Amino acid sequence: MAKRFSITRSEQRYYDTLCRSYRPILILNHLGLMAVIAWWHLMLSDIQLKHPLLLLSAILLPLALSLWGSLNGSYKGAIGVCFISLFYFTSGVTHWFHPTLWPIGMSEALLGAGLFCLGMLYARWKGLSELPAT
Image 1 (tube, rainbow, N blue to C red):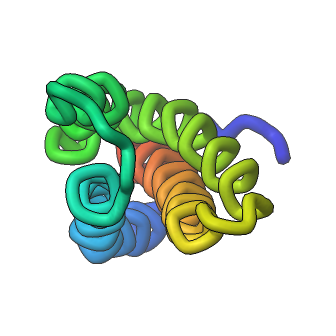
Image 2: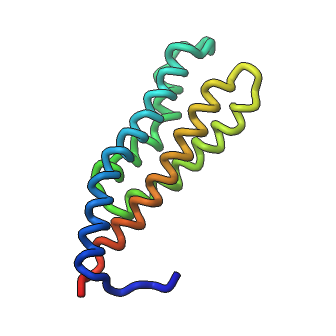
Image 3: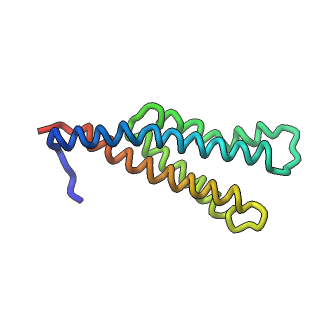
């Protein structure tokens, strides 16, 4: 697709409407992935650690840092969310094929893929909606 330098006002309104409607879904998917990972590691995992919150904070730190990009609503932040979600998707796929870790793997892979797709669509629409209108 060729690079666009301007859009019509109706396209700008359309992309702005898409951004406003998909941003809450992006944030909910982001928080859902964080909640599933926290729930798994705090409640369902049988790892015996003295400080499970230290492990959880190390696992959730990239998602927590990229949450600002989702809340802020910038397209560069959404692109960062896409890159970080790929790590969780990869982790979920590797856990999915383990006999005992498949529930967390399935949910982590599906939420990670959803977060990537939503972030990429949001970044595209946000970038297009900020082009000058002709």
